[in-house]
Length: 464
Image (tube, rainbow, N blue to C red; front, side, top):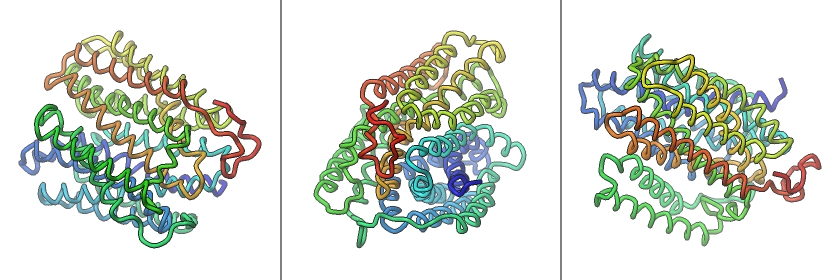
């Protein structure tokens, strides 16, 4: 196996674990509530705290990786994630479990941008989309497979096993990573990162995601929700101003002058809103309308993630050859068609093989064509000193899109899901996907070879 693919394999292990922990705990909440005899509202922070902390720390983590070394930060992230996973599994009560989940999220946020930044230099620019396709497919597969693995592990060894299973895989990543990974950093950075900018970025993103996550339970027009969004928006403006005036900012605003970067990231936010909203409504539909068990619902949509994983790597190779827009636009359309099939063909009573199964195969193809290719469209053409920063921006916007999409779906289906409410939610998911594809079709342009660091003549000029 070529060295680049070995590095990709190591990075993919950690991305799998970080992405898995975003969704796998959803299944465990009822068991944790029963075990701790705790308030379900309080324990919902086992999920919310992870998502908020993960999103909030990504931008700062990307800059730290570029400044102090991607390899070093990658290993710090792995060990943080490993220790925090052990604390989650050993937690005697709610408070320590939530605190350990926050630490786990910080470790995950250190891993994600650093892992991508370690992979990209191992591939020439004309092959990076294929590599990002695999990297992103592993993350997407993990997020989709979370409910499946979660239900199996809970039935077999209990909810604590969800966290202990991370530890041996992290050790494997450390052992092989120390042999393979080469240190790299931004050669132009010196001194400490912009601490004020890092605090502003972390606080702004945390408050915005908090408002999105809790807006439904707080009520969207309440003073608490409006105040949270307002303070978050003010801090975000202050962060942008700080980045514009600081010589070595947490976020280089000039990245957004690159059309491919700004358009692809906006498209990623929209698609993530639909993608993660789909999981929420899907699990509720299967368990509450069709009355499937939790493990049964996980197995029911397992073919979708499997198909998407098979499609993602070839999709990356197609994007390298023909352009990202040529792959993403059909992918978003295919995904939307799958949502339309579910909304119109799937009946109120269980009819898995004739209606649900074929629709989710279509959905899987759409996801495989789209989710990784959008990430490649934003990151493949960045200069090497901005690999981690660019990956952090993409991951942050995906997390914000995820929270936004789930919040909208929650508002659509309400506390008691009905077939009509589920159909409306599936339509929203399809519309979000179509908007993502429309944006890529109308505005995305790959940069010309002359301005792509490390590009060869094989990267065609001004192609989709």
